[in-house]
Length: 117
Length: 114
Image (tube, rainbow over all chains, first blue to last red; front, side, top):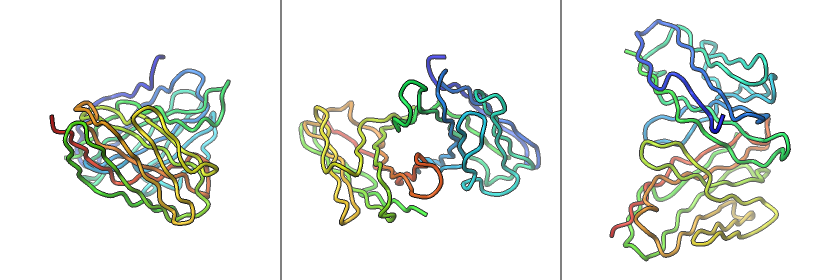
């Protein structure tokens, strides 16, 4: 697609429910990142993939958070047993087009705003 | 891990004046320093970046300077315009893990007064 697409744009859930957030990166981008952005703060790194391989998950807050990118394109961030503190904007970004690897620029999606009641 | 401090948190300038935002980083091995602009309700977008092998980079009205010794870098916007009003984030790439695992600053809300 033309840009990074995320869904849902808004998700309201009750505490204890599981949520899945989807990211469709720019076609041909090798790397896919998940960030979390609290209101008034900068994006906070969660995890990233090169192709289908999860390269770094050091930013995932705890084992309730997981991510996958099984075919090296679309990715899903899953939060199990959600808690109120999980409420935030979750942003996906992609980078590194195949023809120009390691260019550095992150292309962010519009984000998925999660509210846990 | 990397730690990025950004100042000021808010900045108001008159249209036509210059604006300067400063960041410091902790990891001396960091080698990539981008700046992102985020307009209200929009996604962050890259406006300029600098790598550790240069000390300054310019793109029209914006410039970034890097002092590796002091571990700080700055964004300079000249001849500010109302459309420059946004939140600006600096970032630095850490030396551990992925080359592009960016640590962002907390942001500067720039308001350009007409």
